[in-house]
Image: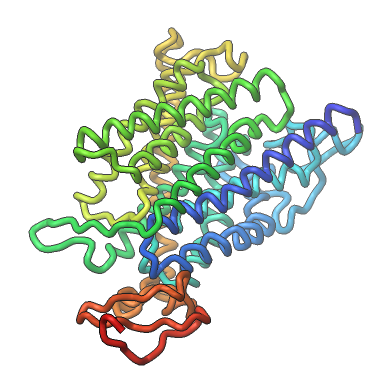
Length: 454
């Protein structure tokens, strides 16, 4: 193995580890945006989802995504990564079944690990949008279906040499493959589950249900921002000094302009710079630049972030108005801005950034061909994931059920689903004016009530 393969492999593995670390970011953001009574549940879902994703992607997802087959799906190398690698790293005589990812020379296990952490990201996006009312094991089953079947099908179309790749569709690091897929699955889950109890009142009234810990949400956002420096530059799957430096800068620029734009937009629309909107603006910029980070200039990245950050605020408000209850804004951040970022490749791409890839977008004299390909991909992926994820949710609903009881929802999923609480020493005030004592062992609620003041 030569030095280039060794360096490229280290680069891919380290950036993959950064993407894995994003699981902590998602857990913290989602927990912070949820009520304290559901904190353990959100943390547990974000913890278990990567384990479920690993099993599903190893057993079937990888082969469906990258195995040789038809333009629609991989048919070879299924079940536990069977078959040889298509990589020069295996030696002079290599014949394998994963042609769709043979363009990178790192070993097969490095390819698998890096792609696995992306698959896990798509699944964890769903967790927040269905928070506060979904059954724990129903969510795990959906995650298995998403990562094992739905996500790799779309991935094969785009990254596995499938029909969208052949049609000239480009998504460098996953605005569509990861974020839109997760966003569509999150939207269908939120709609089929229905809103949390008390979210919407009579006459169209929208009741705010604030998150319990904005400090935790900020920690999560910063962890995600850091992880994105693995997510986007690592997608080169090679230590190309010029390109990975460029991608780091475009990624950071879009995050910053998205953050600022959302802060300004929330001030205009909500009369105050809402901090939750500021966090989602940063994430919106990151999601939107993910498709084009290796294809656009830094100035274009700044504009992409501005647009995404400005749009995410009215998007959150829109979903509330149409009675889609998404406690963390996952649909606005990952779905809306994922689609936008993919379309922006067709507008802002410049051939000099990554020569012989996208060519120029519409705004740089390249005509409409690239834009049409991007729009086609957005529409096709949206239709496919909307249908398949809806079928998955309804199947789970018909067999296992997907929503906890009203009593459990009001009491909190931490107690009902897990038998413990995130903050056992806090005293919970009941509506009748008494306190309910909570044991310090974090496992049970005491049956007695103590008068207020004692």
